[in-house]
Length: 247
Image (tube, rainbow, N blue to C red; front, side):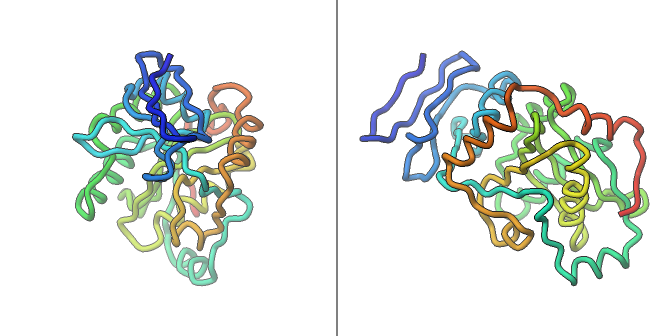
């Protein structure tokens, strides 16, 4: 059971100890836009359940855990990734390589530290621990970009069924995070990934081909692409040999 705070047709749900509490996305608050629930924990069971329904945690210490489900969802269909002429030209000049699932802890640590340096981060130690556990279980994945033996860019997120939920990315050299996303989009067909959830719209993501979907359409696609909570075994297989590949 959940305890609800009514707000006309909107409500903020207080999550209980059950990891399977499921708020109604259509009742998410309008101010702040998309806030749907508060509380609970970052257990793997709760994270996987709520992600499969389109919710994601976003909060900063010492605030309680906040769960969001925006009315407009920023998404990217992998085969519509847009690489500008300047990006293609720049990447051709590099000798970068990429890998899958070879440096998950480093990727999430870089994402956290770079944001902390700039504007503060929501990628707390608790978040890092929770997603690292999901990685060990085979649900969370990373794409890494390397210059020789140096990690210079990448991103991480959660894969379930035919969906990938992107969480954060970083660059230590210009275009490195774009290269990581471009690589992932090129691999998506092999992994049967049909849609990448980018969560919140940004000019950066829109320039790469992302589009916003109404919440109702996004939920329909979730139900289609995640008939059950299960690992993406093809993406897991890609990371098993530890190979670094040329871009």
